[in-house]
Image 1 (cartoon, helix red, strand yellow):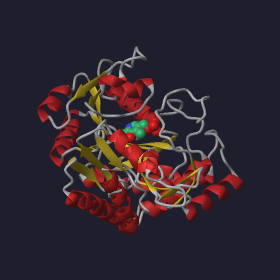
Image 2 (cartoon, rainbow, N blue to C red):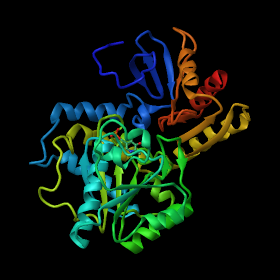
Image 3 (cartoon, rainbow, N blue to C red):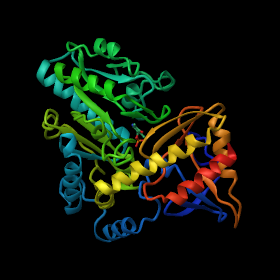
Image 4 (cartoon, protein in one colour):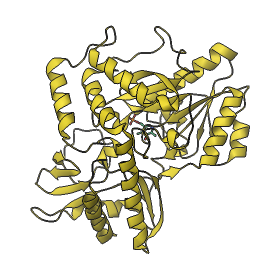
Length: 393
Ligand SMILES: *Cc1c(COP(=O)(O)O)cnc(C)c1O
């Protein structure tokens, strides 16, 4: 492995060379079933033919224009994206390049909305304990985990954390004199695939609406079909003020998006925000394929069905080392009674040259196995992957 990289990742001992569908092949020719999808990014699997075609054709025409101009493809992408999110009340979009950048944009909208309407002093953004919102200084501050608040201070001020599922604590924290926004993940991804209850989310939506506090759904991991509806908030029947997307949105090309509903749509005005690469033509061309494929009722139903099949199959093992199974759609967490890392390594180590395949799963927290397979995975591939998991457990 190369030692010119900064030492920020504890990489697993495998180097990939190519992929196809739900399969990856490493530089030694060993094959792996992919239940990780690059952390919910490769939602249409690897080398999905329409995606390859759209990206290559776009690269042959126009990669980038910058935002002094419009490109036909980024306009088409933005329109289709807002249409796909219109059921959740979204009216317009700002295109960015990553999840953290999308969440930064959301925080700016929240703060400016409140400042313009109520003046200074009402800027607090409430987030949840065990949330994850990104790695920039502000999104680390938004992330409600003390372990992320160590080495890079001072962090952005004005974030307050409450424990998930505690409606009384939320009621107290959402002080209308000081609070501008509430940001949450409908299913907490990085901290262990923890779906919030419909009751809690309904209470959050009601409290925010009553107090004119903007409700932000960070759908960077849950969005773009992952939970079986295009946005997770739709599955709960909630219309947030702001939704952020990234990860799967362009099927493997960097992208991010901040979508705004009625209240938040006109907050950012000329010069308030920008991003050189935002709306990049290749990312937009890829995003169009993802939207055309995923934002379809029949396709979304298949995601829900496959997720159900996957978790039901694991539950049926009644495996003595599995202590809980949680999730929604193809976003599934399996708690085990030991560290996840050795299981993840064993599932990779099972790959033999010219023989048995390995399996890629990731973790969420220390003892949770996280599965985020590509949506195009077949029932048979799910069964095959689960056999590998069972054998290493
Ligand atoms: C991955 C993730 C982010 C950060 O996205 P980046 O593209 O890595 O900046 C933010 N929020 C959630 C919920 C995520 O899963």
